[in-house]
Length: 66
Image 1 (cartoon, rainbow, N blue to C red):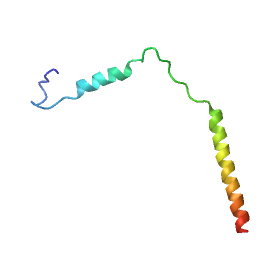
Image 2 (cartoon, rainbow, N blue to C red):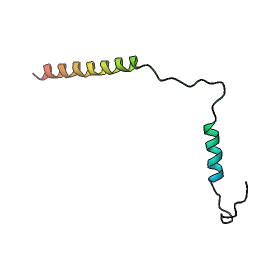
Image 3 (spheres, rainbow, N blue to C red):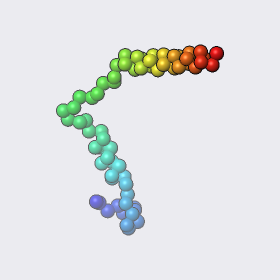
Image 4 (cartoon, rainbow, N blue to C red):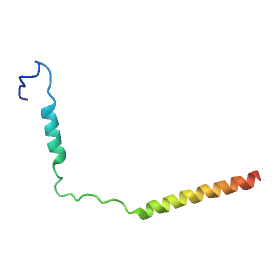
């Protein structure tokens, strides 16, 4: 670690670590393709299923309390 003349003795200046971290994050991974977003089809089916289940439970509860 290089000595920073502006920082008091015994204190760590994180700027160097931050720069090294950003360089690490900015590097593109080698040999890996970026993941694509999941198609919306299964998500729409799940939402419709949940809405249908809630409607069925509400109908059963309404008939039971009637």
